[in-house]
Length: 510
Image 1 (spheres, rainbow, N blue to C red):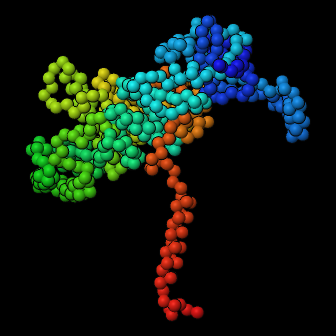
Image 2 (cartoon, helix red, strand yellow; image 1 turned 180 degrees about the vertical axis):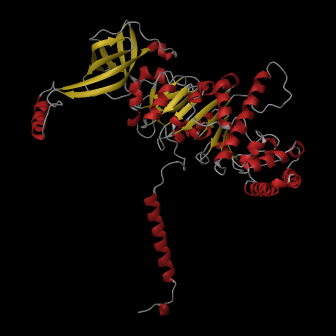
Image 3 (spheres, rainbow, N blue to C red; image 1 turned 120 degrees about the vertical axis):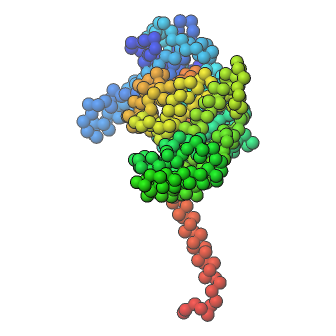
């Protein structure tokens, strides 16, 4: 049975009302209104408490002290107001349809607390596509579920300040996808996901690049030739011939070096430059032997269907990581296009991913920046535009929404937004989502770690969620420096005592 919470007052509109409450109300609470013969669901987006006795006109402490006594003796002194956004008819919302009543409720209409039974049908629907993500923030008895089909078909952005729970949410999604044998690829820039326990449905791997398949400019980046080194770029372009590309393994590196030397011999003015390029190739061949693999025939060969694939980028430079991510994105998109079209015509190239998959790009502001064109930005844009048709979902994760390309961010059909205090970030998020009202945006700084607003197509309604914690994550949280220093000090003290206990007594001075 619903508890009476308050009464509608003032001017009521079809999509928003204000009510006087019998108690303080919290941002994110859900309420029920009965009018027009139906139940209507609303979300509290703002709340306030005022006191007649303790108003803004008080001029000093003594006056405040006396006014407080008056307020405590007067039960009518406090006013608890809530501002509600009307979300739609409850029964329609349970079916995924948001229909706003055409008429507003009349002032005097009673407002009730929404019950767990009423909310569960909206926020925890049945169906295999609905995966668990946590509990409603203000109604912890109600599960919060997300539609993973919509993530794959319409994309997702996970946005928040550092330390607010972005990686924990991605980890939770990964574990849920692993349970249903889904295919997921996470580009792990900071080694945040290597400790996840997903049983047999996980696949950890290092990023691999076949240098033979790169354009000369991309090869220059991975062997760390500077972008403004035009002479070195000239030598590499002249040396990186089709004959060299056809070599495999060590033969590729040897052939490339031979051609660089030949360019230096043929073009005298580039002799010293050729020597520098040769040094760059030898250094890259040695330092990045586990990354650059001229024998790799299929870049997708190590990625496995039906598993959560974590591709470790931690040992790559920023330029190398960008090339690696774009390399995989391009191949995955082409593969999914072939898989989809293969329903109508026979493909000559073997298809790797016969089912849809989801790709996660951490540190999205690095890979798809607003002010710079990168290889990953180009292919991420293509996935954002075309992925829906071919079953390739994109998840971008960042603590700097203001630094992400706005065109790509605007194509993310769903958002998970956590604590965010920078106004530039808030404005970027507001521009990317029509369902996040100004009132909700202004409340983002008040969210605690692990709390989020889910909005967009992966939920039926904007949802305040306390995200479940993935406890086995060992990396990504704040380091407890004092605790570790104390342990180190204790170990040193024990070692010292142990070593002194083995010194013969005759060696000790009186």
